[in-house]
Amino acid sequence: MSKTIRRAVIPAAGLGSRLLPLTKATPKEMLPVGDKPVIEHTVRELVASGITDITIVVSGDKSLIQDHFRPNPALVAQLRKEGKTAYADAVEEVGELSRSGHITYLHQHGPYGNGTPVLNAARNFGDEPILVLWPDDVFVAGVPRAQQLIRAYEATSCPVLALMPMAANDSQRYGVPVVKEDFGDGLLRITGLVEKPNPRDAPSGYAAIGGYVVTPDIIDELREQTKRWYEHRTGEIYLTDAINAYAGSRAMYGQVIQGKWYDTGNPLTYLIAQFAAALANPEYGPRLHELARELGGPGASE
Image 1 (cartoon, rainbow, N blue to C red):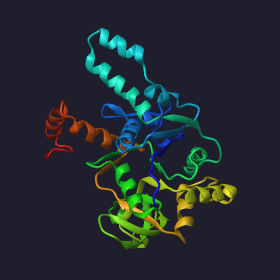
Image 2: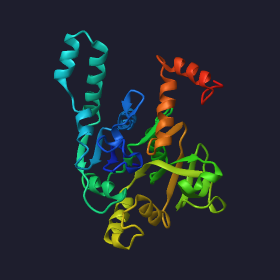
Image 3: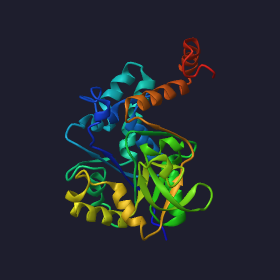
Image 4: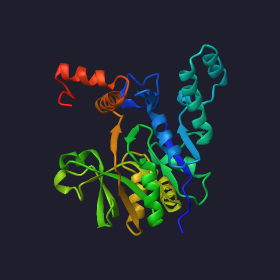
């Protein structure tokens, strides 16, 4: 019987070095996509998927994240006094996310790598499965990505990775799953991940993207990886290494996510996410479509 997934971890302690100098003073998680910081898109996705306990793992210079989600009744009251009702409602709604998602913050400590924040947070979770989502991904989907992962876990009672189809020449950018069986509706049995293979060596046509259902057994594998962190190729602890160790002998699944994925972690993909969000905005999107056509650039044929 699958346990209900009610907890999630968002690792947000990274430097954002690929976006420097933009991220020198502003955490990459707080860069805007549309009218929201990118991490707010992730938090909203989790809350909409029924998650009631969100842990954001931060480093010492990420106080802006906490400031953003902290309720601010004084500001709301001032905006209402000035008749700025829409702005007051928007600020109040962000504060409500902190309550409905029961957001807590944890400072990362331990070896570098994306497995460390998961281990840091897992100490409070006992034997519950958890969702792990990166804070620099934005998904636009009819059914939230998190909910699609939860459904896959409920069907299998096993760890689940978020997957999306990829172009063959993109394989060197991603972890590529080894697919053992296709159950339909995007649910795949996988036996491991090959990191950034050459296109000719890619074991499937899917990329592992941001999103995991992590079970206690994966956490145990992470602990084993930590014991030998100095043996790793970079001295870092990777979640994918624990996943590979687990998948070698136990059942693991991938869920092909239905929707559009925007990675905001580098300058080009961040600009693409911004542009897509702007075009989709009902207020100023139509004018931007016109501008794109006038300039003969992206969107010119729309």
